[in-house]
Image (cartoon, rainbow, N blue to C red; front, side, top):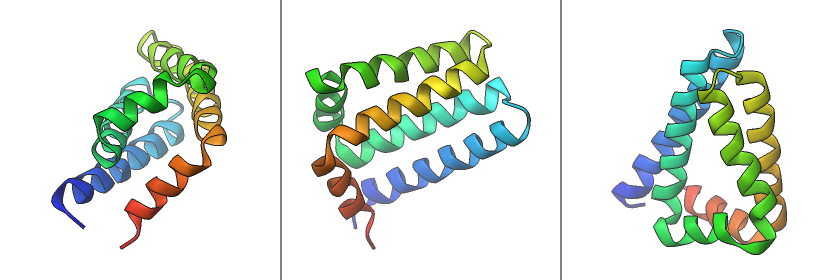
Length: 111
């Protein structure tokens, strides 16, 4: 496992931690925004720029991409519950369609 993968896993872990804290502390906007930044940068480091852009720009994934991006903007506009629900739905739709990508991410996370 190279350094980029280790940093990506660390960023995903930080993102999950801040998401957990943001939910426990009654959907705190700042913690959920930090969680978004960490998770997104962790996925980009694990997959690479090209694969991450292909994931978001694929015609089958437009619905999930739009929901995920609207969720991020909703959190930044101080609607954390609506934003979190949109992000969860967008993430589900993004990774539901592409089993090969999910397997690729899981393969990179194996130690």
